[in-house]
Image (cartoon, rainbow over the protein chains, first blue to last red):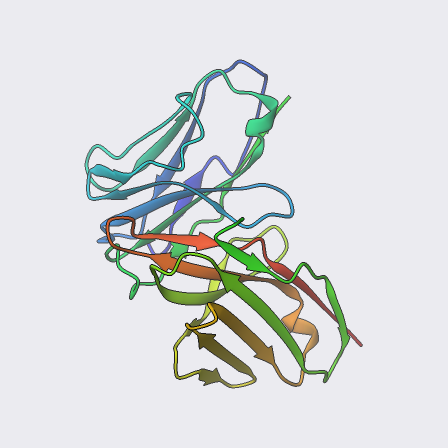
Length: 115
Length: 111
């Protein structure tokens, strides 16, 4: 597609439930990033993929968070046993390659609310 | 200490004013720097890259001082449409390859 597409745009769930957030990057972009943004804060790095592999997952807060990108295109961020503190906007971004010369294009985000 | 720190803001300025935002970074391995703009409840979008020699894009000027690990953004002749949050961003490579964002500085331009 023309831009980075994220679904759902809004998700309300109950504490303890499982959630999946999907990201469809710009076609041909090999690098894909997940960030999390809480109110009043800048985006916080979670994980980035180069192709199918997670090149850096150092930002994932704990083992309840997991992300996949099985075919090197669409990625899914999975959150198990959600907690209220997981409430945030989850932003996906893609770039042509993972170098500083390339601009990240963000999707509109998935707003997660855990009740 | 956060890797990228910005002026807390908010900055409330009248139209036509000149306003400057500052940002410091702690990781000397950071190779590239950017300013992103984020409108309320929208995604961040690239405003401009920052080069050591300084660069200008219309009313916007960005400066980088590697010795002081300091980045700035100057906006001249502020417009109402400049109201947004400005995010200072550092790119860390060498096995990391990720953008680190500051918390952002909010700008409100009023008539």
